[in-house]
Image (cartoon, rainbow, N blue to C red; front, side, top):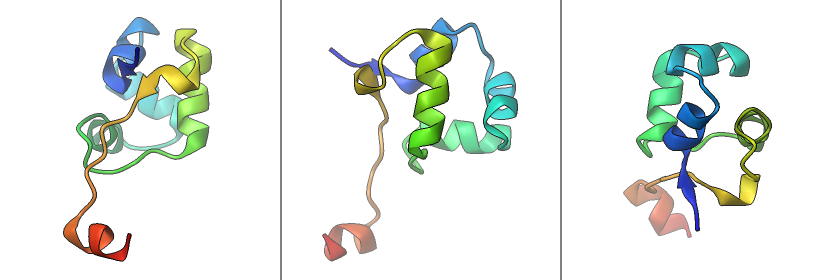
Length: 73
């Protein structure tokens, strides 16, 4: 079973702003990751895993490929 990235962040007791600070990104970037607009790097999932206690393999990151990306694959 997987847990959404946003739920893992909340489980870690972090706001989007706090998590953004840990990752060195803007709050809007965290929001984009959590809403599937962009994909976070593995380093971010590692931070989230460490802070939440949830293994990286169990953190679900919704990411929708754009039409261009789908055509390339």
